[in-house]
Image 1 (cartoon, rainbow, N blue to C red):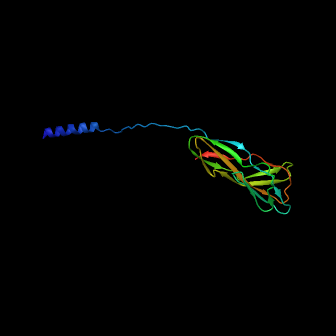
Image 2 (cartoon, rainbow, N blue to C red):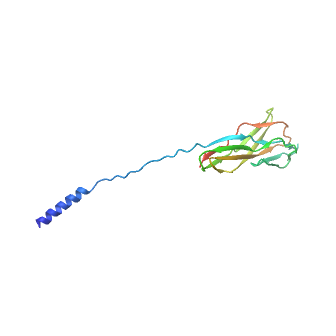
Image 3 (cartoon, rainbow, N blue to C red):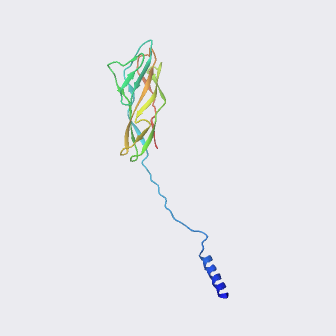
Length: 168
């Protein structure tokens, strides 16, 4: 019986000695730095030549493809002038996706500063999300120009407007 008791005590001592109050595992940390996203302008937006009736205004819708249509009292003469959607190039990492934020509105002011027109309802191709293919993608931006009845003839220009891109 004493031997059993001594063996049991030794066993408990060995068992207790092998118990560990803590244990450790290891891990590593990694980080990948990607190319910052950037956007550069290739072309400004131009609605071209526009004629408006004295009693009725309307709109000129410039699509991202560079085509335009008119509504109500606005007509588009056959001598179009310069018609162009705004054009940009986005650059970044690989095949990542990004969001596109367009302005809500921009004001075009007559060269004499006496009248204004508003461009709004901006649209783009691609629309709200783009995908970089090989690290680049082109964006085209159009908008709707509101022309008042009897709008003063002359050149109207806006200040800068922002097109913002951000990785998703």
